[in-house]
Length: 417
Image 1 (cartoon, rainbow, N blue to C red):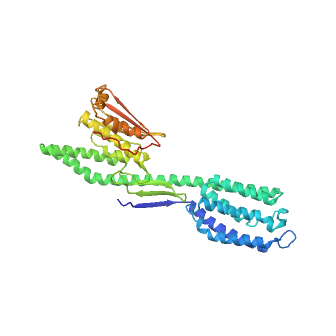
Image 2: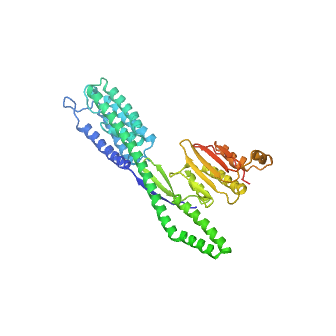
Image 3: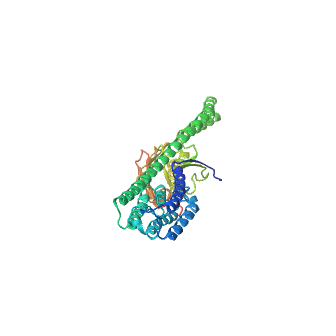
């Protein structure tokens, strides 16, 4: 089906890119004016080879203005551009002694001057403090080489740029983490409000009608009593589904580098998954809930790769089919989902008569491979395990474990029948 999405974007990072854009333009102008009006210690024109300075500064102006679109956001500021930008800054620093022979004898400005800091800040905003440390280290080395015999002021300026860029990179990383947390909080708030609204509407309409049909059907008796019983079962199933919190639309939180993004997307009607994204296992297991099947889930999404989630849900469905076939239509079943750091555990338990010892091996020998293929086979293909525990007269329990990074086989597992 066609997918629609609503994007909610929050970012303290975008203003930093805008500020960097302005900084690059202003410092480019400053470097040009400094070259035109700057004097050496004797009050004379700085450059012994002015053509070197003119050529470099002309290129710097063209480069700065041409690459302004590159520093508008993290998406447009690519790694290739960052490296090229840093090379432009380093080249200007190393060309300074060629244009100004006396630059090594006093702590005068380099050709790019403070424009160089913009190249380092781009690394900090794009990749955090580690990228900033990488870029500022190269700038520090270039400044020390350019000075020849660096003074204390040289080391002071180098250290200042290094520390400041790392600090800014760290602040950017903290801001990104805060944005992701805020996006997740807004997602939960929106889901909770939607669930409450739907619960009120359903309670005021559908659930009351079902309850009334159950009461009237029981009172009338006969075929109406059977209709009332079915209405009662549907009422219980609907109440379970509403209270599970799985009714709101699927929301995908992500970090788009230029801010935390929450996307509200329509899921695939047949499979309940979003193409190219992890799937919330709860959305696939919730339809099993009903008057005879209880569903217990964590409060947060249980995310697995879409293919793995579908296979695990199919294994759960096969286990429930076995409950209906072997334990009877009146048997009660329970589904429990546990979200562990390294694995996802789904337990299916029933209160049926249990499985006699040796019955599974006998069924497999007779060619009835529901447990062997539909349950254990699927979990084996995912790199997980399926453990079946049964005590005669005390029901049966199937524990399905899937690792966080499951390997999904391209082959199809057998059916439960």
